[in-house]
Image (cartoon, rainbow, N blue to C red; front, top):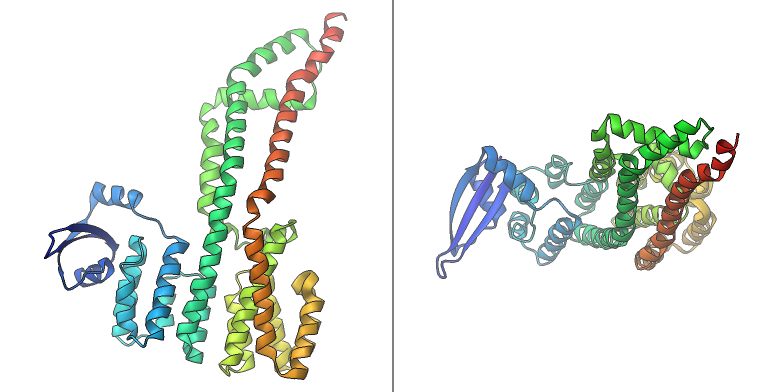
Length: 406
């Protein structure tokens, strides 16, 4: 339920409005970040107002996760109580859902629940890898470091996402204009062309037939012109679910450049988590299982689970890595070589962290060049669209002489 909290500074009289998704007044005050120098009035938001607030409110973003976990790490490093630490983060996040989640988690902690169990209830806000890392931090007693690691990772993901959004503006506009031109031609130019070609009773090229059929479909069912826009919106909105489908992950992994980004990202998260757990003296099989849970890509989850089975069966970690190296792509042999060095020198965690550092540096470099990587793809798509339209329109023109002089 939406609750609107009106905070008034008792000294200056300044009024601040905050919207929180929660079920009672006490949690609403926590989510709004009420301080001792403010008075508060809580109102239920229902009916049409709730719809308007839901549409206009800030959406859940990576920036909220960065603010939450970065702030928690800072508070716990200074030995602040965990419940107080959550209270202090309410003013740092912008989404009403996140504000409500902070209040709910703080309430659960006050009742004696484990933090990971409480966060698990908010699986729509926190991904499985984040929840698994928090469980690892609880087990190892290193929650501040885990929170710092999550904030660092989410910050990098946020930077890459912003780069992608910025880089997609140009191709998005170009593709939108291209689709709009095709739809406009389907309602105006193509019907006139199809009448001319029909009167000549001549065979049309396949591309022209497709264009005429598409035009006829739109003329009969004009509402289908909105389908591309609706499809694009639904695709972006549900990308998180689509990206979890195994077939989609396989396709992305085999895509040039994109596959390289996915491998390095999954490897960096996995090896960093494994190093953290080993340093905390967590049992190896448990550490590998938790690491598998942190992997968002099924192939890397499978890799760490297979390593766990090999270790349980008595094999060493380097041998287990070597057996499953095919799942790591082109860098598999290199990583196995580093694991052999680690086994001989006893520097396993250092080398795992070193691998993660190298991959994260490469990801930073890729993030700075995303716009340059997208540009040639845009040119190819635009060129293909223009070439297809030109061929479909002008190909029949070259055979008009034959049709007129039969």
